[in-house]
Length: 617
Image (tube, rainbow, N blue to C red; front, side, top):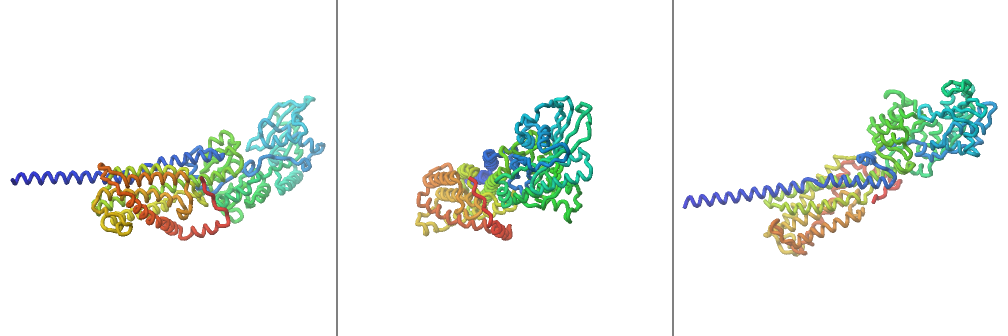
C-alpha cells in the first residue's frame, strides 16, 4: 500500500511538472509573438516605397531610399541660380549693347557673338544670341567653320576659328567678361572702363557677356593669331521664376535655409537675392579660400558660410568646400547641380539633387533626380519626405509601445494571478494589428514644420511611458474582472470571475482594442480625435475590431481556452477601453513638454504667422 501511494505521488508530480512546463512554453510564446515587432521591416519598407512613388509623381525620382529620411531633416539647401531660381530663358536688349572697339557696331558685336555659338548644344546663352539675329542662319552664312571650342566651367568661354569668303582666317570668343578681359590683355584704363560697364549692368540684375575677336594670319587652328581685341559687351537678363520668391518663403518657414550658389558676379547675385526676398548677404567665392581661423568682415569663415545668403563667382570646387564646411557644422545639406564638375559636390552633400537638364555624370552622383525645373519641386519633395518620415516615426513609437505593453502586461498577469494567456490569441492580435498598421503607409499626416530626424530619446521615452500605461490598464482590467464585481455593478453584466475561458475572451478584446487604438495617438501631433486619419487606416481599424469583437462574443475554442462573453460584456469592454484611451493623449503632451521644456509652445507661437503645413494624403 505504501509503495502504491508513493507511485501516485510521483504521477501527480509528473503532471504538475508537465503543466508547469506547458505553461512556461505558452508564456514564452506570448512574449515572443507579442513582444517582437516582426512587421517593422515590412511597414517601414512599404512606407518608403510608396513615398518614393509619390515623390516621382511630383517630379523627384529617388535613387536611394534613405535619401527620403535625409531630405526630411535637411536644413540647408544650396541652390543654383540659373534654371532653378530663374527661368534660364535669356534675353538680350540690343539697345544696351556696349561697343568697345572702333570700326564695330552693335549689330557686328551681336553677329560675332552668334558665330561663337552653337544652337544644337541647346545652351540657353547660345540659343538666345542666335535668336536675336533677323535670320538665325546668318550666324554661319558665308563662312567655313574650322574649329569650335565648347564652353566649360573652368574657362567659361566658347571660341570659333573660321574662314571667310576671301579665304582669310578669323577667331571669335565669347564668355565671362573676366575671362575675355584676361584673354585680350587690355590696358588698365580700358579694363577699368569695361569693369564700370559690367558693374552698371550688374546693378540692374543683368549678366554681362564679353566678345573678342582676332585675325589668324598663320591660317592654322592651333596658331596663336594676332592680339585679341575686346569688341563689346552684351547684357543678358534671366528673369526669376514666377514662383521662386514664394517658394523660398515657404522653404524658410519650413526651416530650410536656401543659399544661392552662382557663377555670376556678386552684384547680380545680390540683385537676384533682393528680387527673390532671400537676402543680399552675398559673398564672392574668394572668401572660401581661407582656413577655418580666417576672418572676413570680422567673422570666422565657417560662421560666414553659415550666415551667408549665397556666394557669387563660384567654381565647382567651391561648391564642394561649401558643402563640406556646412556638414562640419552639423547641418544636413542639400546641393543642386547639373554639370560634370558638380559631381563631387553632389556626392559629398547629404542630399545631392540633379536638376532637370543635368548631365549623366551629375545624375549618377546624385541621390534625387528632378524631372521638372524650378525650386518648387524641391520644396514639395521636402514636404512629402517629412510626411513619409512622420509615418515611419509614428509607427516606430507605436511598435515600441506595443512591445512594452505586451511584455509587461502579460508578465504581470502571469506572475500575480498565474493566469496564462493563450499564444494563439496573441497571434490573432498580432495578425489583425499588423494588417491594420500596413495602411499607415498611406495615412494622412501633418509634416513636421521644422527639419525632422530620429529623436531616439523622444521615441523610446514616449514608447515606454505609453506602453507601461497600457500594460497597467490591462492589469487593472483583469483585476476588476477577476477579483471584483466592478463590471457587474457598473454595467449590469454577469460575473465571469470563476470562468477562466470567459476571462480569456474579455482580456483578449480589451488588449486588441487599446493596442490598435494607440496608433491614433502616435500618428497625431495634437489631440488624436482632432486630426482626421486616412480612410484606409480608419476602415482597417474598425474592420479588425469588428472581427476581434465577434471572436470575443461568439468564439467557443477549446484549444485556446476561450468562450464567448456575449454582447453585453463586449459593450462593457468597449466602454472601458474608450475611457482608458483618453489619458494617452495627455501622456503624449506631458512627455513632449518634458523633453522640450515648453519650447514646443513657443515655437508654435512663432510660426503662427506662417501657414501651417497641410496634411499629406
